[in-house]
Amino acid sequence: MATTTPKIVEEITHSRTGPFAINYHSPDFTAGSLNAELIAAPTRSGSATYLTHVTMGIVRNAANDILVDARISIVDGGGSVSFGPVQLTGEYTTFSKDFSKPLKITDKKAVDVLGSAVNGSYQAACFVYAEYYTGDNPLT
Image 1 (cartoon, rainbow, N blue to C red):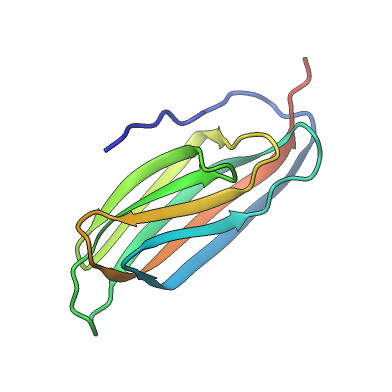
Image 2 (image 1 turned 180 degrees about the horizontal axis):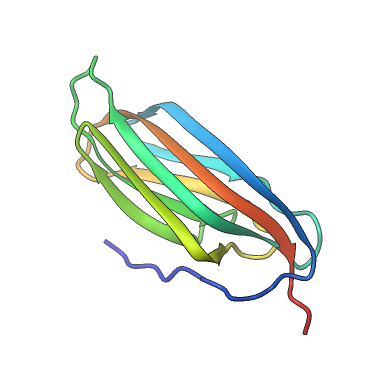
């Protein structure tokens, strides 16, 4: 599994909007991959999304009785991993993280969720809850 280095920042943004929260779910995250937009890209030049909290999880689809091992990542709109992958296993698994200093997503990029199977065939429901704000580059 690849390792990523989250971009945790101490910057005080010039202009700030929020806080906001987003609750995403995919009821049928099946034998392929998950790739969905969570938060649209900021429209102002030099503006970025800053995550302050993320909770993610999976629930096994009991009807198909398929155990799940999945990796979930938070990525920017260009596909670069900002946080993760977090490996979730078993019938019901959650992961929660509060960022004491915000996790900055690349300027003017959306925030997406990306998931993949670890062991081939699987079927599950996936959810991601995130708290965030948008801000312009800090004053220099």
